[in-house]
Amino acid sequence: MKENDTVKVAVAAGEIMLSAGAETMRVEETMYRMMEAKGLTEIESFCTTTGIFACATGSDDEVVTVIKRVKVRDNNLEKIAKVNELSRCFVEGRLDEKTAMKELNNIRHLLPYPNLLRIVAAAVASLCFAYMFGGTWVDAVNTLITAALMQVPVIFLERRRVVPTLVTIAGGAFGTLFALTLLNLGIGENVEFIITGAIMPLVPGVALTNAIRDILDGNMLAGSARTLEALLTAVAIAAGVGVVLTSWMAVFGGVFW
Amino acid sequence: MIVGLVLAAVATMGFSVIFNVPRRELVFCGGVGAVVWLVFGIITHFLPEGTVAATFFGAMTATALGRFLSAIRKMPSTVYMIPGIIPLVPGVAIYRTMFYVVTGEHMLAVAQGVYALSLAGVISVGVLIILSLPRKIFSIGKGT
Image (cartoon, rainbow over all chains, first blue to last red; front, side, top):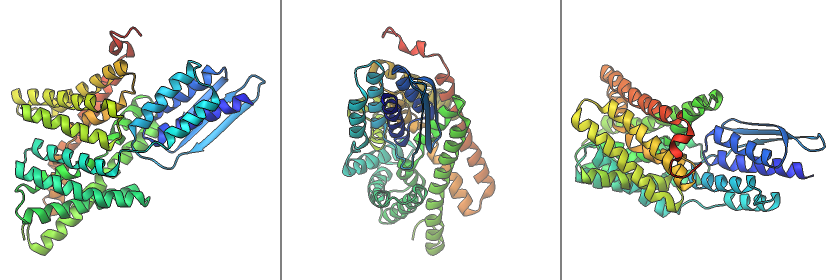
């Protein structure tokens, strides 16, 4: 039955977007438009941060419902952009269900930027932040090295599917450790700008922005969930940094040994 | 100032890579970051105590640019907005809050914490105001 396929394609599109970090309103609207374009009626699409529900009535009065649980979550704006483009083609009738599904599978397996590039990007961004926050160039160099080294345990843990909060704590902890070590080896002066710059790549930018959008769209459930996610990430960073910093100061009696 | 703008652009592009922004949009994301930092820099230059106001207008700028670019480049606005507001995130204030909690100076921690929260709050409000404007405003020059 054709209606089945349409709903399945819509849900697959929604799933990819949601797990790539799209806001719920975008997911709901995309799925709605895709189903509407293929002549389904009484369409309902509902989405929270962890699941998708879609329901529609086909031509022979049969009701199709699909529920999809979304587990893996990361930030991949490219996937969102690609699905967005695909859904536009689909709605305009330039794609049928079969090709759309094939395309979606390609998008699902789209590779993120290579790890090395990610490390370099994080390191360079952190360097810029350390300087922008008010650090000196020497501080910035420390931040560059710290941020690059810090990405290694972060990527290692992420690959092993460790709980995201734990990864963030580890990131903050390792970042602080490397920053303090380098500081004591004579690179840098202002510990606060170094550590702040280095932990910037862990900051919950996507969660925060999406939380605002979800709440504005009246999707309070997803909005509060995302606000909580952003807060939890911030607390996790602070915990990671705090633990190492306190231990360091307890052992060496100050920032410098 | 110029150095600051270049750094802001590079930092934003770095974040865009972390967030997997499509290759062709990286430059635009960097541009948004630079403009946001310019707005922030101009306001804090004339109002040295106006970090909160500067953050507010910076967030509005990032969102507005995101929506304009979204209409022009036919991309979701999130692609530009998320990296764009990163330079405004109150990293130092959050760090100081944590630092004072750890060192037991709780009054200072509360002061920094409230400051960090107010910065996060004005980012939200700035983004919210621009997002709630009707779509038409941002699609000039493109017909629809």
